[in-house]
Each structure stands twice: as structure tokens, then as C-alpha cells.
Length: 112
Length: 113
Image 1: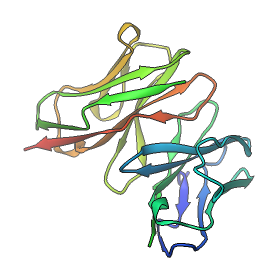
Image 2: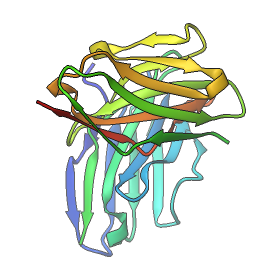
Image 3: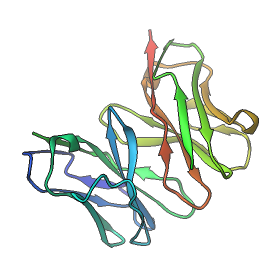
Image 4: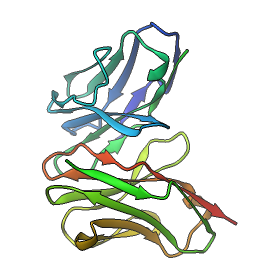
């Protein structure tokens, strides 16, 4: 398996624009996680899905953030409108009942 | 609620020296504990995990960690550091049945020649 695939790897956008981050989990994994990494706050869980259903979205910063998982092989994290303080590395991870979480390479988002 | 504290944001050792990275956890239920490593501009890679089997856990690249319930600790060690071990290391905890991870703040390991 190619592992967890995230796209794009880098995104630079202007404040106010919509940003969509994409994730393809490992085939057969039924849990998917979105994390954000910043210098100030470290690694934070934003949201996680189990069997495509959001289980815990308490880490989503505000209404500008939304995440979807329309099927077992795809998830998106959308920020609309984006702000400079959203600049961070966003990681997607997936796991199954019997495995630990495997992480993607991350998307480095810069909002100018 | 669960949390992880990593003592020391930066640790520097000489090549060949012992590596000790500290992690203390807080959890209201028996925890699952993990150590992940992150190389520059990369995702996180699992080093090892504790899931209530043996208290001494061996991982990849010669690392191991010991779960000590009485001390609520899960420190990471390696007998002899290698230059390629330079990276950031994260301790993480999850509660049984909930696979989302709570991470510590990370420890950056430098290995001096």
C-alpha cells in the first residue's frame, strides 16, 4: 500500500480564500484523523471519523473549518475563509481496529 | 481526560551516548502509549507502542521504552545514539477504545559527532 496520501503537499493562498486539503487513507482502515501542527500549539487533533462518521470534532477551531468523509477512501478538510493564523502543517492519519495510526506526509499551508 | 508531558524540548547527546527522552502521562483509564518520530518535512512514524502486554517495549531502530505505572512514565531510551537519530520525538496517549491520540509537545534530539 502507498500509505496515507495527502494533497497538496504545499499550499500558499491569500487571506479570505477557500482552501481544501485532501486525504486518501490506507485501504481497509476504518478510522481517519485530521491533526494540525504549529510551533505554538504542537500537534492537535481537529476531528476524527470512524466508519466515515464524525466521532469527535471538538478540536475544530471554528465554523470556518469543516471536514467531510463521503466514502471510506477519501476525506477533505476545508477552510473558508482562510486566515493567516491558519498557517500550519495539516496531517491526515488512518488506522484500523488492530493497528496504530499511520500518518501522511502532511500539507504545509501558508495563508498570506 | 488524558494528557502527556515531555520533559525537555531539546536534548543533545554525543554519537554513541545513551539517549533518554522523558514522557509522563495522565489518564483516567488504562492507557495505550506511543512514541512517534518526525524527520524534517516528513510525517510521523511509529517507533513503538505499549498496549498493556509487556511493560518493556522494543521498537524500531534500537529504541525501547518501559511502562511504569507507579511513576506514570513511558521514557524512551536507546543505548547508543547514531547521527541518523536526530529528529523530533513525540510521546502520545490514547484511551482504550478511542484511537485518537493526544500528543506531547515533542523533544528535538540533536546528535553531536
